[in-house]
Length: 414
Image: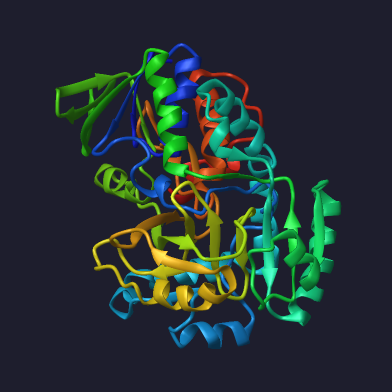
């Protein structure tokens, strides 16, 4: 095992990989074109989702599909020009979302999900970031009484099966719990175990500062210049060429820009999303993040204000932003949450790196010695960053992995 490593990508996954390798005696340089936590890791809903034991599959209810195909949903919209690029990926995603395959994906992801909060807690304590992390869970809110009744039963079954803590609130109980909310919800399910972060970008930056304090190095550079060099790897940075014995690709939605030139055909596509911060005009502050299930958006209390994050937009990386989905979600959320003035000059747009089988790539590249993959976390990059990093680092240094890593090995796409 080499004692030097290049980690490409300074999001939550890359920074966590750098920390876990550093803790195992590896001299690590973290490389990114921007500063830590300034891309995808900056713009999420701030949920460390230890209760999300079933991945987000392709909807298979025909009524939902009819709703989505109209392309005016706050839950999902699509760019028509991008659809040909998604065709094969969507077909695979549909196949992998069959009940049996989705159950297999949930089984494979469970060892990571159930350890996600504990792995974050270890880094939060070391980095001194407790003030922006709250162990209060989140609310799954339903507008439809029938949907709420149905999902209460399902939630209790999931909670019992996985030893999760859950509490149900009808409409009056929800307004007692969250006095800031207006009319509109039939009830909510409180998933108590997850943690929430009031500034996800700051959390990643805090982890990066810990990495630097403990002797790590950060360099700005172009990850696309990565190439084999002897028995190691080389990348160009603003400070000149950088060489190391091994390299870890942790570039999230841009990972294929590095892996494809090396001959890998990983089926990685992006689901775009937007957020905007708002002042609050509600009579009380919002305490818990609230996921509007039927609306497909989240409103979460953040340092900057109330952050509204949208559902999914299927559009390739190069397409211009389309704020229609955010505008529609804002119209739905404004009266319920008391959204006031917009606080950001322009909406933020980010990219979620998604694989059709809903599992990340965590392990050795099949055809290159010393090259490792750590990307493709779908909707759970913040949740799974530290626990994924531990698994990758243990494999790299030859430790016995704390869980079976084979479901996440990149070789499944070779």
